[in-house]
Amino acid sequence: MTALRDNRAELVSAAVAGRVAPARIHAEAMASDDDGRIRLLPGTGGIALGVHAGDRAANWLADHLVPGASIEDADGTPAAAGPLHLLSCIGNRVRDAAGRGIGIVAGKRGGLAPGFWAPQLVGVEISDAVAARLNPEDRIIVETVGRGLKLLDHPEITLANLSPRLLDALPLTQANGALACAVCAIVPPEAAGAGLGQDSWVGDLEITDERCLAGSVADLHFGDMVAFADIDSNVSRFYRPGMASIGIVSHGPGHAPGHGIGVTILLTGPAERLIASIGQGGMGATLREWSESLLE
Amino acid sequence: MAIDLPASNAARLVTTRLKAQIQPAAANRVVRPDGMLQTLTGQGGVITGIGLGSVAGAWTGDHVEPGISLGHPDPAANHAVRLLSCVGNPVTVLDGPKAGARGVVFGKHGAVLAMFAPDDLALLAPGEWVAIEANGVGLSLDAIPDLVCHSCSPALFERMIEPTENGQLRIKVAAILPAIAAAAGIGMPSSMFNMDLHTSSAPVAELARQLRFGDLVAVMDQDHRFGRQYRPGWAMVGVVSHGTAIGGGHGLGLMTLLTAPADRLLLEISDTARLDTLLTLPWGAAS
Image (cartoon, rainbow over all chains, first blue to last red; front, side, top):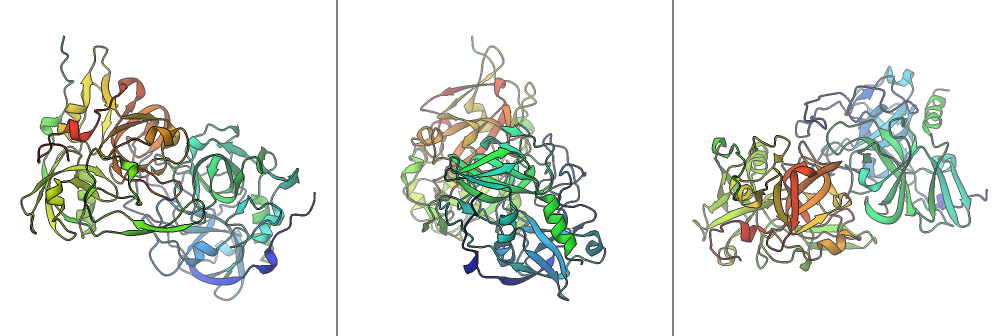
């Protein structure tokens, strides 16, 4: 394949400080499931021990489970997406207060109504060795880079939440002026739920129904690539026939109505220029390998 | 042969007097899908010149709420205002130059929205207080337990539904929209906030063009019993509450009034499916 040309040489790298988010129960949020039953399950904030990128997303009894450590801006309310959230890109390296690499940004959670509806979290893939010593509210630093990244030969495609490092690893191919991406599921626009109407850089867009155009929602793993048909994520996430949005599975199922597995958007463009096809769309093993390699 | 309304539990519903305050106006800075930043009149404040029955898409603004927008500075009291107020509930002004003026709850967004006569709106202002006679939460029909009402007063409910011989409820609506109309508001509580409509693309754009504030509108394949979600075979009926919005995934605001399996309902398009024809407005004629 012809090399993808991009503008990474002009991107700014910024160290952004934040903290490991504490586990929180948001009393204002609904805890009922699709059938009205109250279900209070873990999953928001804190550190999910033993849960990793590449694991099956529906494996645990949890609500919006983010693998590894959930981090956030240390200033402001948990409902606001601050600079840590807005600059972090998937594939960015995360270090602790002592300067040791601890993990790799692997997803975002939030975007239901940023500003007044918590939480807005960034997920970090961490090894079990790091998880054993990391605590909620520990200071962390994200080495952010990726905001502004563009594909020079594909001006109709917008990138979001995507580091140059992950771009190089994505299952992309170029043909006839279009960019094709392997994904594990293609979801119809009706199944796009919580996260509609919000900034594509905040949180995720959730899959509210198991009916797929191709592939399977039930079998999705953390780190799998997923496409939404007829969803535009150029500025905010919304229904626009003829557009496609492709992202990465960042959190597990949410049980409240209109919620489900979360997908953080990475690419969006006209469907004839950004082609999703079922294939080897799992990036979880790569993210986990990058995180493990920080220990060496 | 006239058919009786199915028995409801309206007689057992509690009326609570809530105190609420007119919220300040907002100027919304929003990035449009084409990347342009625009600042427009937003939600809140006292909006004059737009009434129930005004074409909702005819105004330049972002989430504009006609009439007055109500909330409470104490978060828990505000939660009660947002949850307990129902469309059709009476509102009385408690202070300011229009103390004693009477209006009606017509919708919800983040705030509870109430309409008054134009002469009253002309002198109402943010910071003034009102009382809402809240009644309607818990409304249900014995015969149709899977019909769930939200924010719907018994007074409105009894006028918007009509029994039919086969047991379905006939509801007249201004438009019937497909599931893809459902935008921001999916995944949020169905008894608070509202659901924006994707009004920028066909076919919803055409169907929504003539919608008016206070219109009853149905969206298919939506289950709003315990929250808002896509579920084939269900339907919701709501009321047009706030105006257009310029961000992608935002548009006219539709506040949920009821939801049920679609085969329980007989939805009929009508040009009188509006609050200003269904409700007895305290100031008389439609504004």
